[in-house]
Length: 298
Image (cartoon, rainbow, N blue to C red):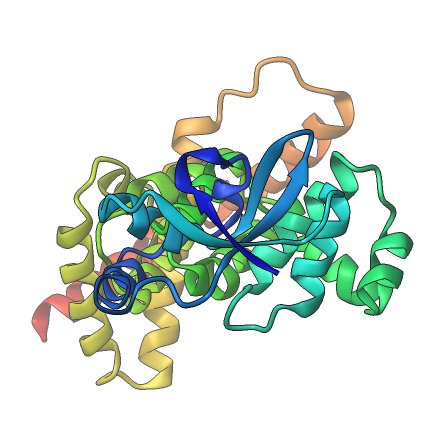
């Protein structure tokens, strides 16, 4: 049954669990202005509170249009049951995988439900639920905030950022710093992919430029290098990649070589490796100088 409810009576505790999209909301605002709210908002009635679960975009549009009464359908008086119903009967268009994941996280955390319980009630497999739990486990609070606020694209999180989140050598603080640096800048998915690869796999200098906000300087260089790269042979690309790696690790070692106290096992291995490198210095220097001179002549 659909009721007509005062808009001021809703509890919005789940608003940040649903993805925001400024473009979608602008289009919806026009539709609501012309046709009103066609699909009722949905929530649960708990202890005289109407806890809204679905329809936050419609709610915000109604607020902007100063509407005082909106259509509302109750999903019952049980909060966990309402969340289960929302996930179970929604489709991909109305509830994305990230929104499903965040609501499942709520069921596990606040409502103390197990993966088995949730899977049974949703009539899904345990692996289906576990995948969504895993996605939430990969998101820090910073990443979660920017993605759900619509400032960092969902696609970029799912198919670009998660590749680096799963690399053990990449710190969570670096992931957060990158997301903060590019969020809300109206960058395309391709631009974010280029910047992410440069940030996590490129030089310290490039990383510093992104951190200080020089995104468009960085993108210009990356796109220019990308265009040049398309004209190179595979052998030439391999040589340039090797040079980039050597330069990056030389810079990193110079900055971090002060080890302080060290174990005997570390000292023995480090001494052997560094000795082998020292023996190669003269040959490496001659080879690099010859290579540099040959590239200068062309």
